[in-house]
Structure formats: structure tokens, C-alpha cells
Length: 218
Image (cartoon, rainbow, N blue to C red):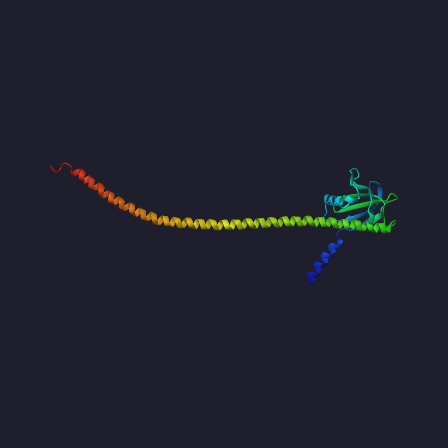
């Protein structure tokens, strides 16, 4: 019972602790500004970037700032955060993390300045974190399904080999049976051959005697 409770506790803790959002001031291309950082354990920068591109596709074109190692969307309108007002969104991605900065043009979004909008931004980023986790799990599921298919394919091969081995045995038994019959026939043929030889020896001897007797009667 304790083991079950511990497993449930660990599962619950992991589920709650994944994709957590925190708010902090960080250095970005436009200076030190307030951002919303999502921790996504085990997520690679490549995966986070791929999911972010899909997640924000409807809000504008994602562009890259290679010098600052950032991506950004200009004049994005996310109604759940800032209504119909456009804002620029900057993101920096690293192993297991993404940080988003929301530039409202009058300043960067923060809980101290815009508490309601900031809570909406946290929810927006939280949902993104979950989407990354979903994609992680989808990939894991795909890997496990591939492993299952490989195992099933291996079993099919083993079954086919098993059938082949039985066929080899059946064929071998048939060959043995045929060989045993051939042995019986061969032994009979040998006996007949010996009889034929004895008969032929007698004929040879008769002809030899006939040869020797030619002219001796005179």
C-alpha cells in the first residue's frame, strides 16, 4: 500500500512540476527586461523551437535574430493576453527552457505593471509547455510503437524459422525413410547380383571346358 501511495505521489509531483512558468528579468537583445520562463525538463532546443513555431503560427511570422540568438514575432495579436493590441514577442531557447518577452511598445509585460495580462501570458506559456510535453510524449509513443513493431517482426521471423525447422525435419525424415527403403532394395539387388555372378561363373566355366575339349576327341 505504501509503495502504491509513493508511486502515486511521485507521478503527481512529476506531472505538477513539469512545464513550470516563472517570471524574471533577463538579458535579451533590447536590454534587461521582464520575461516569462518555462521549464520543460528533457526538452531539446530543437524540439522547443519546432513546437513554438507551430504554436505561434497564427500570430505572425517567426523571424530569427542570429546575433542575439533570439526569435521574434512582430505585431502579434494574442487576444487572450492583450486583446486586439499588437505586441512584439521575443524568445530565447536553451536546453529544457524557453523565455518569452512581450513588448507592449509602452514597456515589457510584467505582473507589477499588468497583472491581468501577465497571468494570461503565464497561462499562454504554461499551455505551450504542455504542448511540448505532449510532443515529447508523442515522440516517445512513436519510438515505443516502432520498438513494438520491431519486436513483433522479430517474433514473426522466429515463427517462420520455427516452421522452416519443422519442415527441414519432416523433409529429413522423408529422405531417411526413402533411404531406408533404398537400402532394402539395394540389399536385394546385391543378392540378385551375387546370384547373377554365380550363374555367370558357371557359364564361363562351361565355355572354358568346352574350349579345352575342342580336338581332344580325335
